Amino acid sequence: MESQTGTLSLQNLVNPKENTYFTVLLVIAIIIWLLAVISMVGIFAVGILALAAWFTHGLLVARLRSESVQITPQQYPELYATYTEVCQRLNLASVPELYLMQSGGILNAFATRHAGRNFVVIYSTFVETLGASSPMMKFLMGHEIGHIQRKHLQKKLWVLPGSIIPLIGEAYHRACEATCDRYGAYASNDLNASMLALTVLASGREASQIDTRHFAEQHFKTRGFFISWHELIVSYPTLSQRVANILGFHDAQYARRSGRNFLAYPMAFIFTLKNVVFIYFGVVIISVLIALGNQVKKVQSDISAAQQQSQDSSSAKPADQTPTTPPSQ
Image 1 (cartoon, rainbow, N blue to C red):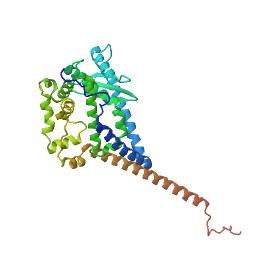
Image 2 (cartoon, helix red, strand yellow):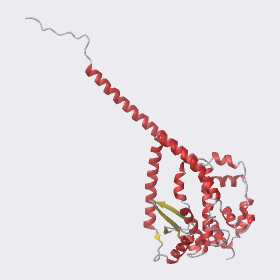
Image 3 (cartoon, rainbow, N blue to C red):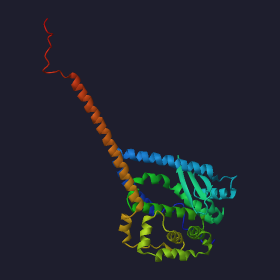
Image 4 (cartoon, rainbow, N blue to C red):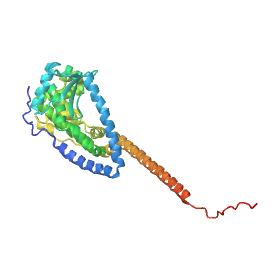
């Protein structure tokens, strides 16, 4: 292995932009949370959505734990040994459960969390492509463990209200992914293997034929309007940029900044689909809750008026009523 991660250590694995964006999002989120608490209607809506999301995610984790294979010393021992080695290298205090999921050819892996427990999931095609104990597999595992070490799963909930602001939320998530690529590169202890693991996402099993430097150059050469727009609205850095970021630890020319077309910023701000959808449904839910609240108040008012009218009727005395004298015999 030619390139070692000599410039990476446990002390410099965090992308500096991650903390900056997190602070901005947290300030925005705190303001929105406070407004929701003051309005009460907003906090009620958030509570309902959070509870629904928790139960839904619980079912997904249940499916994962019951239908995927948990990796243990008895199940896929070579893969388990690689995983524990990566966890030790990254000084993980508690080893999360690892699961292997049949993917139907899809290349993916992810970390998730539910009810205080962390899980790492690797799709089977990745194991078939990278091998159970290769440095590329270590990169993949290290990347997912990075999400757990940095508590990205919990922080995502903390800053969720702030994430509705276009551009900032996506920028934070891209910074988190860049941090996790550093974790993966440190775990693999091989920059070439780390870059190759990323190119597998771009070309599948034919990645061994890719020149990673040439692929990284794509990031610097293709800086047009649409590519800039695409970069601003996605939650991951582009694959060519991710390869360039890792190569930058070995070759300074790939660590240089790349500009974006300035017209892409207003377009990304206005036309971020997920934010439009999120805001739309948020407005709809709040409007419905307000309408229900007004209807309840109206019903209560009508009941009070009816009760008051009933009390007035029972206590009122007739004004012109004269006693009736029976006719004399």
